[in-house]
Image (cartoon, rainbow, N blue to C red; front, top):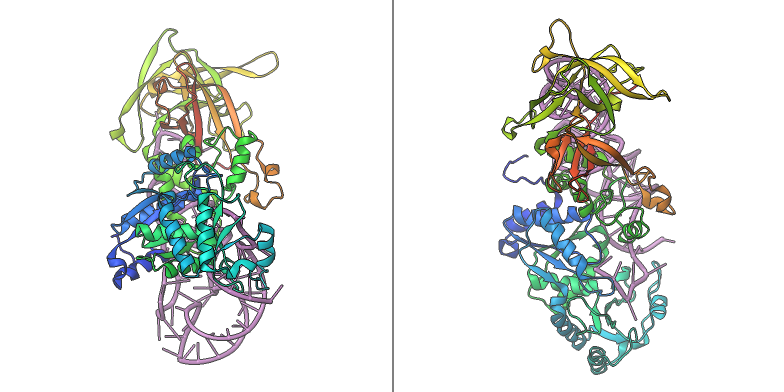
Length: 553
RNA sequence: UGGGUCGUCGCCAAGCGGUAAGGCACGGGGUUUUGAUCUCCGCAUACCAAGGUUCGAAUCCUUGCGACCCAGCCA
């Protein structure tokens, strides 16, 4: 059944929520949250979660919080907090409330005390090695720590002193007392507090013990009144713990954790460690390098928020591990840009063309449309003169089969301008083609020549009027679909992932275009003005090529 | 060999007992002053496999097979 009521497609989470609403669960409320850890930049995989959580909230008239899971100060920083907020907003979402798990440290501590008083948690002096040894294995039950039966009074005393800073880092931990024989490893008395004298980006040095994720996340959700706590598949095994904590604590709310399969995109990696390595070892130029799968990288490449949102919708939402082909993302980018990017002409690898029968000092301003299908986007004027530049690829001394561009003795249409004929090829002493001598047909401006058909159309710029530019062509960062499968992912970094073209010339209307503005360079692709641009030298990043159905033999 | 989860077209993905949606990719036709866009057509007798229940099964049952996740004082 299809309905047009909701813009977002059906999926299993919406089925769950629809049913919850039907049976009156959560008083009809839908409250979600996007809970990143501020220990790195957001990437395309996060975008899926962001679109999901904010999208669900919007679709059900609910709300979505942005909550930083900042329980491990060793890896987290305010720089990441700022970057994450910037990226979420750029993607087009507004959070209902901005929260931090650290906002709840005091309550979390109180809840821990309650757990101890209920005999559901104990202070353990086991070392990490002992704990590992006593945890058992996937097929063998674990063994109880000698501290497991410590008295409640002693646990309370020790925990209080842990907070007071009486013990060294790692000397004690607080553990939930659940079941050392559970087939679910997460239930074998998981650590819920550890002593760590690390400065926290928000709470400073107020704390020397920090709560663990499993303990913190569920309580944070409950405190915020989250109704549907959506996370990725690897947390499925943690759900019993999530529920255990909230059940034992009798929290006023008990959110439902729902897991979905995280995004896996061919030819990309999203491991924070590996992404960081690419940046640190200079395989890319920073976190916002257009080859990076980060939101910042996609943005700098010229990808639009709308394209990313569309992508996240198209790929679906299930519990199946799957790999999305790059083509899907590229399709979404092209679809949005085709609709919204203004057209322009840019010659990436120039070849001079002199039009012998065109007046020496004449310049004509030709009016061309900014978008072939959308006249409302207006027109602009482009100077045409005796000497122009065309793409080297658009001329062939020995044309391949079905070639429909310029050849010696042949004609071609200059986009938005006249039809020209190539009369002579000029070469340098090394035999390189350096110039074409052509003639134009004055009677072909805005109309087809009579008695003959010109099948090719090529783009051009006036040499004297063109704006100088550097164009950066980006290709996929890896040479294999799944770099994570490699023993060393660095061995499959694409050595040709970036091609820098110097000496490009773009039409003068592009001079001074704003950073991040996007254009379709006709016949070559979509490009975005890079922040490295200067008044003299503009810099463009290629977002994606145009589709090319021309099958060269 | 413990527990959790998942198997529908090359890649995603609907489907929830009534006889296989849709998208991407791919192939072909048309339009076009972008080899773009747009448009039309084609693209799973078949749903991991094998049994079974049923008038009827991708959907229910059984047994296999395959894949992914879990033994951090990470999230």
